[in-house]
Amino acid sequence: MALLSVNLDGVAALREVRKLKEPDPAQATVLAELAGAEGIVIQLRRDRKYVRDRDLYILREVVKSKLTIEIPPTDDLIERVIEVKPSMVTFVADHADSDAPVSGIDFNSAPVDFSSIAVRFKGVGVGVCFMVEPDANAVKGATRAGADAVLLSCSAFSEAQTLEEAQRELDRIDSSAQAAAKAGLAVYAGRGIDYRNIPALNELNLIDEFFIGNAIISRAILCGFEQAVKDMLALLQTTGK
Image (cartoon, rainbow, N blue to C red):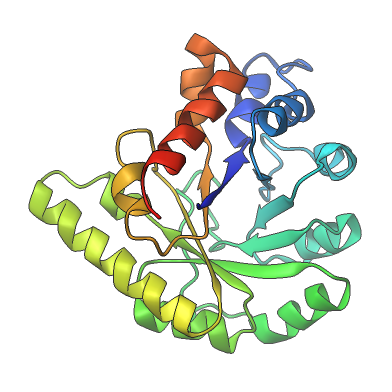
């Protein structure tokens, strides 16, 4: 069965609305893991708008499963995450506009030596993942850069307006996941995944782990955090291999 990591960016965003101490991502971590989540994901932005540096150190101590930190490849963020030493770092594209949607790494245009960065992280025991679009060339780029895993962006699939468009995007995810697995990479999927579309992705039997945040946090407002996580896990158990 595919594993579930819960993205807590939405919890930090809610905290920022009133600029208070709650809701606390660390408290949400405990509830998510009690419900069966196998990992916690958090994104540290350039502007620290939602997740704060302090959160990283607290989560490093609180998380009992696996902590993954998403960052764009900027020097200060790289240094901070190397200091925290999570289980894994996931690189996303760096955008000058901090409000731009998160997107995958384009290895053909990124002015970054990802190979040397990957070596640095692996040297301190941190796994390396790259978020990429579901494209075979992007998977090859991640492999050359020294990735341990790829996070396939499912945004186009989740935003599809027709069944034909959704099937086309699902096929892209399928072929990219196969290419990643053939290259010896762990295959993760995220971005836009919810309770309605996850069965189709899980039935591919190619995704090792799903990174899901907004859908779980939205449902948690109505039924509680533990129940929202359990509902997602139940879907993983009843679909796929």
